[in-house]
Image (cartoon, rainbow, N blue to C red):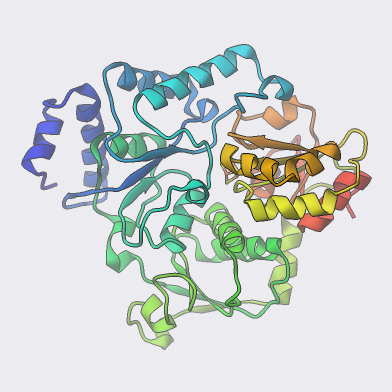
Length: 413
Ligand code: F3S
């Protein structure tokens, strides 16, 4: 790679160990992908989760912080392993909570905004179009690339951290114009009536697109951020889709021709998503067989104020079936907003909980099993997919309304 004089100084240790180590990580990554140079970034989104980082990852981050590491661009955090004000109620051990709290301090010492959400763009951290950023977490990444028009690769925990400490990433992948054009057309003929239908479309798309860039035709102009968020999260789960375009909606797709970067229409392979595909994909995500549900989970990705309002409307004046829990995961900031609006009181009066800083998959592997859950209902394809990969907890997947009814009756219908 061609490095500038300053970057060579970073690599030589002139700016201290944290910067030197970070530059080593970034140069190795750049060499792997044949990057020619480094480019500056405007933000980083980091993995702060002790359950995923493990002891080794936490020790590395602590060492970087102890040796004076400071983030040089605005940096935010994905959900952590605990809600600092409610971890005991979720059966988390004191030792585990202490490790996460210690790690949080290392991150804040280095200068992060500890927003602990996979929707940092909802709480004020919105990159501009064409900004190069280094974001971690597949649902967050695909939203930044597709809906905001920012540019990021799928950064892992170490590379996002290194980027935050140096303000740079190697220039390859989705930072380059030529890799941002569509190479598969998804013709949507199914009627998308519910929020989760967008998740179903995304899950179908990830399966057929794998690592390609899909271009959606036929999505209504009224599509919301919540729907695009669910669509992207699902496509990034069943495939490694990192960028998608919606013709006439997303910033790099004013027309199909622009989205495909000048390729002729005969070079756009087209796959149709009709009623049959909608139905079959939705069915495929439900793996549970027991009719009794013991947990209903919303907010994967983290719920917006609009989603929380809808959950409050559906739960208003009702009670969860005894033995059934319902969690709504969101950020601290959106929870505060929902409290101010009275939605949290309505939801919690039913026996449900609004949790923040974390999500059902963030604590550690086996967390849901340890709490004794066996059958979970959700409107999130990502959550259903990951839960469905295990043996002990099995998912039902369906609409928000259907999940709420399951929480109230205890039965999946
Ligand atoms: Fe976000 Fe956790 Fe889902 S990080 S995308 S709520 S698995």
